[in-house]
Length: 362
Image (cartoon, rainbow, N blue to C red):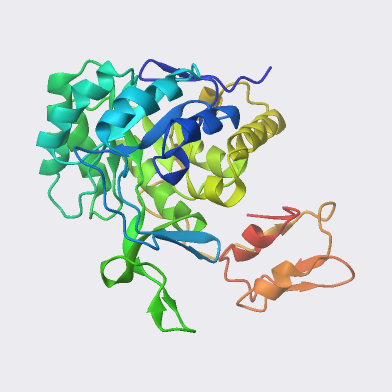
């Protein structure tokens, strides 16, 4: 029987699909909706010592992705402590409170948030650069003043995210959350010449499917570098996306953009898709496939010579996508079956990834 229950740093989640800190968990009512929508646990929007002054407009849809100039919550900290966190606690789900940003601010906020009922803290540092010192200082500050688990959310905008994770682990972090949004980025409305966002320079931060491969790489790098658990974030919109992060070593995942695009029921939908995936593979628990991809990630290429993919004739539907996408003119549908010319084939593997029937394999 398939079980989605996971335990991360002593927090028991009914499934590994959590919200990410953002507009869809902006207050207690929104967190309650996330719980009703099937989230395995809760992560609240980031709080700081004072409310944010958020530029408007602050969110734009860029194809299947979002660009945002959102900041931390624009609600006072006291309201979170007295109203919003207690509402979230009534759901009965573990609550992770996101707080930021500098060490002195975290040292001030963390005890108050713990007292209000948070089961763990997620430290949002938004640090861009090459020196992990601010991450270390934030971690140490939180560990000095609270007894609940501390997760460090890392930005991909660093040269070596694994080094940042190791520094956080050494400083006492109980877990890592990766990744934050990517940027700064810029999108311009060509009809008006104006940026879509009302922030300084029109800059924003990218989230959604476009950043998923980067996020998966970061999670894999971190999981190979540290022993503490990792929660994966970035572009997840399906159960298979979540499974990809778990195979890269993540213990759980967080979702933001998909929730904005598809609504708060997306947590349950993705959790159900994970169940279907697990049943199809014979997995009974998340641990059965957590990290299994890491052994297939060698530091050097295994093979540099071309090898033509095999066509599984019983699966081929002659849809023609392999022929359409092949850059080398090596695949053609002949007699309602894909055929690969081994002389022309470069062995790039693109046809394998575009085949909806999985009728090609290397």
